[in-house]
Length: 207
Image (cartoon, rainbow, N blue to C red; front, side, top):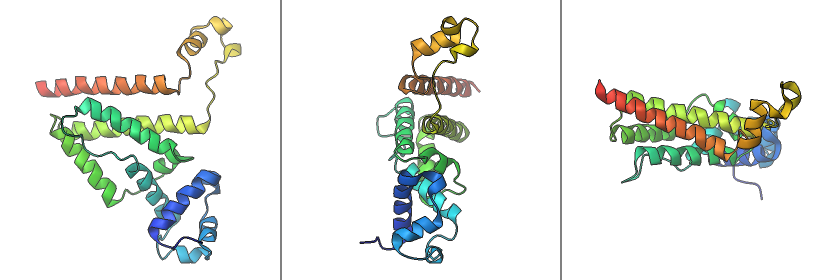
């Protein structure tokens, strides 16, 4: 039984197709075939493919289940939790990071979520500007990390290109530190961002 045609089911179906065929294989014609209709029928619900991609991006972002800090949760704890949940949501779909990075216009629901997050950080001593810059900086970091992970980039040490081969500092770092796009590397970068934000927050309090 084919799903009923609506904006919501179009986005759900498009995300399922994304997992099957990737961003390059996701076409309006392919999506229309899933509903047993011709492509023009989709435009009653989503006028352009970009609007479809925007809807998919919103679903991925909101699917992280984030929002403002919880009662009793420090901003550091919240920022770490938010970053990890957002990364998991991006990686839950094939080319999920690319979908989010191609989004042109967030939905009102996504804008409201960002507003609640900024307000939550302001309640913990941030200025609105520092709160927004912190949230977007962490989001950009997670986007980049997820793009690398989903791009299939090799983490092997290019020993044949290095003076000293496997004894070269870069090769040694890769051998000892493991995958530069792995969990430990992600946590290291996230901690650096959180620690840097703490310094910025402290300095802002002196002004």
